[in-house]
Length: 116
Image 1 (cartoon, rainbow, N blue to C red):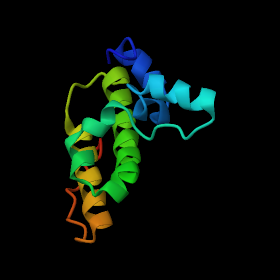
Image 2: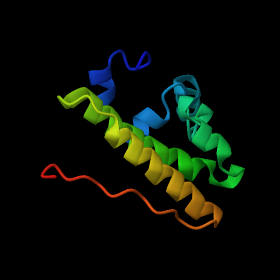
Image 3: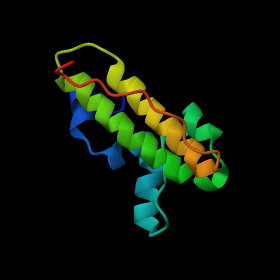
Image 4: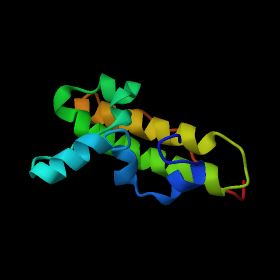
């Protein structure tokens, strides 16, 4: 949130921008010298990215970033203050990590619909 300025500013940014937050210096250097851009910024220090094999860190970083962006938007724009969306998204990311490692998916909890 500190890098974006506020939760609302962070919610307005696309997932790809959230992914490289903290790596702005490396990004602009890469663009200036026409080298490869960084894959991740602060999200690299997340425990889920750290658990992944080096070959899979970029893919897990993108998955985690997409789910983080969704959770950020829910936090910023919804009126409910429940952590259910974040917990569901974490389970999806953990399941994706297990699937990529070849351990097989785990059963995800059922989603609650607003009518229940």
